[in-house]
Image (tube, rainbow, N blue to C red; front, side):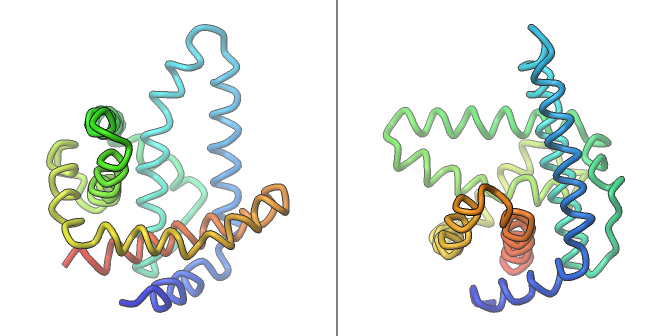
Length: 189
């Protein structure tokens, strides 16, 4: 699929569902904010809840690409695979950090290699975190630049979100996430 087709499909997929997706985002933001405020353990607790929420969002957006209904409670689906999600986040960040030690550019390239790992885990929950990361590296061979250009194509939308003090993000963030999920589906083969 072309970038235009990925984006057009994403617009259709989020149409009529922005309210649900917005409430999901508010739930994640509020829970994260409250936990962060807890002295001493807040930062550690955040490390434990962000990866399952990331996995949940991948599950939600993959469901949208399959024209399946989504519910607000789906924001907690990733907690069923909490251990895998946390481990995937840890190893992804660790390997990206190691590549970044060489120079910034190899770290950025590797972050694109690992970018589909959460989608892979959401799509194949039976995999281990290491297998999802390895499959992402394989899947992204020859597609890293495509994703980079796709991300760049949202620059205007990101600037609009900043200019509107985040208000445009109600539309832009689901639009970007749905487009990324469509990208995943188009390259998974």
